[in-house]
Length: 192
Image (cartoon, rainbow, N blue to C red; front, top):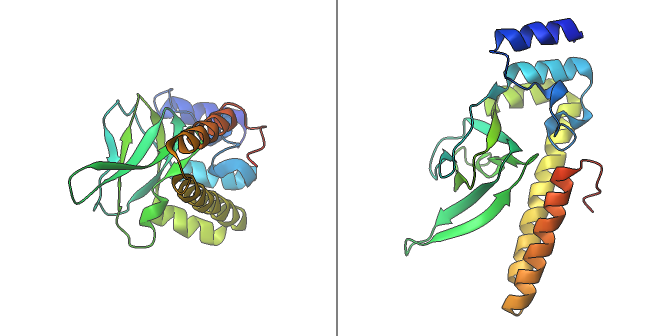
């Protein structure tokens, strides 16, 4: 898209929307491998939300999968409620992460996603994204890469929970979180 069209589109959308081409976390998010034409197509389906305030939920357990959410800033926690009524945290999501993958299989969210601080997200309608990824191999490949990262994160969490003592679990958790914050702050940092 030529710069003039981007400016016109930004003015038409209220002047405050950040588009994929201009987003500082695009190296961490879906647009990473897309060419300009593909990026424009993706950009057209994304709904930019107003800030999500601390304590607000993106979705609740049992909600139908309608969208995935790309976190632009802030922190989102995912959690479930145990049979005893206790909250069980299942993950922390930072800038560049996509939230909602766990609902793709069943079509319903098995967990809650709640803002831990004021956060900005881009809402990506799942059906439209799925259709678009069928037409765009680069987008499909990027979605697979992101899902693979989500699976690896889950495996790391299982490994963390299997550690023998609380000190080892805490140390591993803090190390993992610091690596993720470093990756969110700098798209050039290797996540290996």
